[in-house]
Length: 378
Image (cartoon, rainbow, N blue to C red; front, side, top):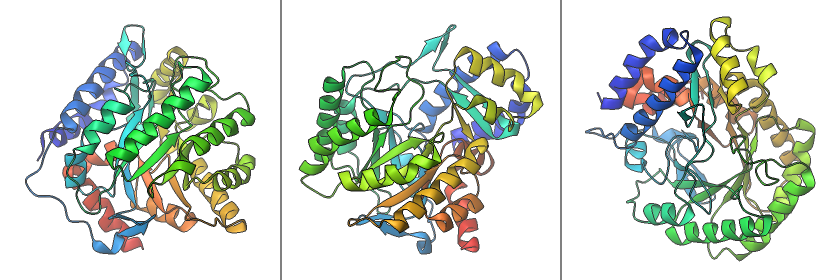
């Protein structure tokens, strides 16, 4: 058993009680504990790599994914963790979101990178603020990583919320070019993060026009200048208005993007609260009232599935002239969730909270276990 497998299994036994003490103390503890766990997790190792059933392998954009499930962007930061991720059988590896300028991340009330789990509700909150070391440094790290067949390398990127629009777009285009040179296999453009402290029109789009202006600039400054096949997928929030999805799909296709991802964390606190058990609502109210941030996990499942179905219907009504795929993130927890996603029209899925919940049960066999169950369902 790996070190972090043991940590996760031990924590799973006490966490339901740990979140019921003082909300402030619980958030401080789990924020610090999460940082420690992830530092250990990305450096962990196993003696023998897991072998995923070959029947689950799929090729998208000319890239082989050995399974239709892999980590969402918030797990591995700054290009770390590929060796571990590939050894346990993930369908791909996605490096955490980077920006042009390095960012330390959020801190408030003496709590750095605030995080709170709601274990019995199968959910969590975070207000991290995109901590990262920047495009250039992360691209350099990724460029030197030995690849494992069937586990491609992706990276999540975002416009720098501290910069002016022109500076942010220029910096993002430079970053995309750096990742292109580094040899990454796919890129996810994060248009969904609710966790930047700055109230900028980049981090929090006031209108659809601002969003489309950003997408158009990235298209002109990078997509139309790509010197190799490098898929760029755009990730939207789980709170996206379903009525706007067909328009989003049409726009992405017209601008040359290669896919869409629904959806990142939710800030619809009132709606999500109905899915939080009463025993965990005290810490939920403290976190959302003090930090805000995004909700992840099971409360997002029904909406992310609905957005996936809506996107698939829009894509069927207006097929892309180039290869275009849908990814579902938000509430992915079981093999049934993955199967349901694929039937709804998604080609791949990502998980965050669901990954950690399953890891606490199955440790390094987490991908092997869920893929075996998925194969039986399919």
